[in-house]
Image (tube, rainbow, N blue to C red; front, side, top):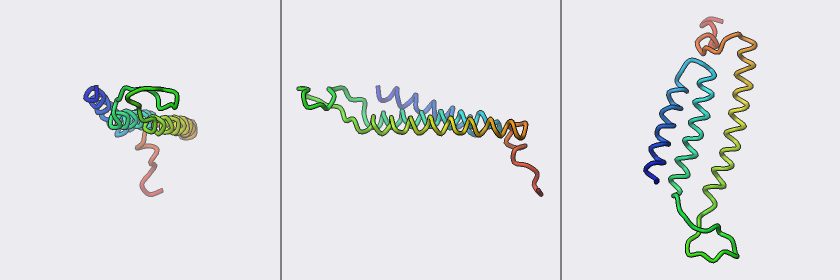
Length: 112
């Protein structure tokens, strides 16, 4: 299962990198969002996809899962959603003000 998750994370990294290297601002924002989710999937896979009971005092089980990777990834998911929403609003505002989302045109003239 870890091999399959690693392949999926690699595909997401590839798609995110391809989108981040494009000229459209919206594609760059979507690429960074996909890149963040690929990182979450990779961290979850690195921590190990273990099966076991929740680490609660009343549970009597032979194996327990470590809740720390899931807690860190959940925090990272919230932060990445907030950053994506912020970037989308910033990109929309730039499109309204400047009339384009092409990165070459947003860069402006060389001697301004």
